[in-house]
Image (cartoon, rainbow, N blue to C red; front, top):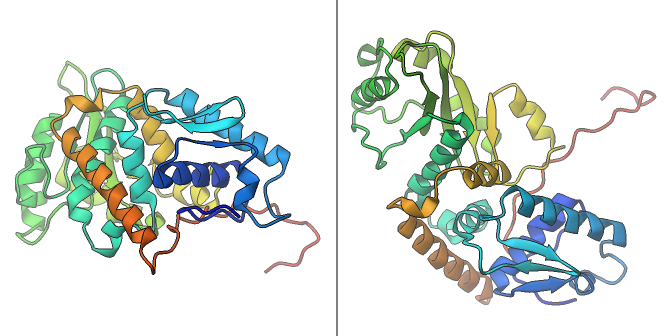
Length: 325
């Protein structure tokens, strides 16, 4: 077997293989992997077959077509390559945030990067909202002009949206921080009247992200800001979630909008240029430094391959003859 800083998968779905190939090229500092060399990373007789490799190449091509200027990998002829002409900063950041054993997790340095992840989420939501959409980061601390105290911050957000504030000052105190949301977006009309699309988003890098939508209580926010109808609830995560993952069914009943890594990159592809934001330089520097930290940790004597989040199990097809569990 060939050596690698990334752990080879045991399931050979297109998603699992794509995640592994991306991480291999990203962390090992190599530019490409040929189709023929893929089997050398697996025990003899336990490598993906030809059809599974075909699906891997098709998945990489689909990702590249969806976000050609932000997704840095390409399936070219018989190789998968890291295209260094593409600015892959945003995708690399989301990859690092997806690694369960990344140094920033072990060292509890979440506050360093939360504003950057919230920035990507804000811009993705604005892109999703279309012409005229706006967004603000609401997690504390951040750089979008939000007041520190939650009551003042809610009043500020209502003003930004052009909506009336409700009972928030009677319900929060100085210990409350963000009311469960990290980003808000909306698309109002020139007439200044209410009844327009709004989203309240929870952004998380936690591995158990399916629990996080409960942080956003729509009825509470409807009391604080006069939305009228309930605002949409969004969940933003850096992980790539397979389309057949059972967790998608669970989240379907908890959020109106799920933004995983590939949806974020797709929306960011059609949004504002990220390098126009002052935070971009920090985002790029942090990501480059964290790659170095991660490689150093993996090359240490006690280092182990990075643990990617396990691909969530697909929904099983029930056998009509099988007994109930």
